[in-house]
Every structure is written in structure tokens, then in C-alpha cells.
Amino acid sequence: MKKVGMYTIVEEKTYDEGQVIFNENSSEAGLFIVISGLVETSRSVEGRKFVIDTLQPGDILGEMEIVGGMERSITAKAVQKTALGVIDQKPFQQEYNQLSRQFRNILESVPVRLKKMLDRACDFSA
Image: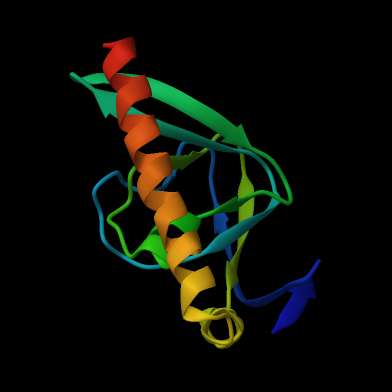
């Protein structure tokens, strides 16, 4: 294990240019931090790719799924050779579980609202 900023990394994974990290609607859990390289996040809208963002070192992905317990709402793909750190879920959950139930409810509502906004934005782009 090593620290990257304030995060405890249990594993570092390397992806080649164009390699898919995870697909939209998949259900595998995982919280990642971009250590090096770039990650394109996109969504399929009526068969067309809608690019949402390009993540850079220090950016996190997978937070909507780990906090909200949802399926992946995006596809993540390495734009170039990219290293991602897998954030240890145990310390994350320990910290999260120390929050009051009220505050956890607030945090859990954020991914739901973000997904709704993302759905609407993608609908407008179609």
C-alpha cells in the first residue's frame, strides 16, 4: 500500500492507450485516482459516443458507484498510457461509516442527482 495525496492506494493498474477501464452499465465496484495519463469518460447516446470529460492526474472516478451503489453511468477509457490507483475501500468505508446517518443520506443523494443531470444532458445531445 502507498499514499497518493490523502488516498491509500492498494493496487496500481496500468492501461494502454485506447484500453477500456470500465464500461457503462457495468456493476463492478471500484474507486480510482488517476496517477498519470488521461482518462476519457463518455456515454453512449443513441449509438453515438458523447464525451463527458477528460480526467487528469489527481482526478477520481467511480465515486458515484461506490457512494450511490449504482451501475457505472459512463465508460472510462485511457487516452494515453495511464496509471490508476485503486483506492482502498476499507479505509474509505470506515471513514464513511463514521458520518452521521443524516450526512450519509445527503452524500448518497448527490450521485443520484448527478446521474439525473447526466441523463438529461445526454438527452439534449441526441
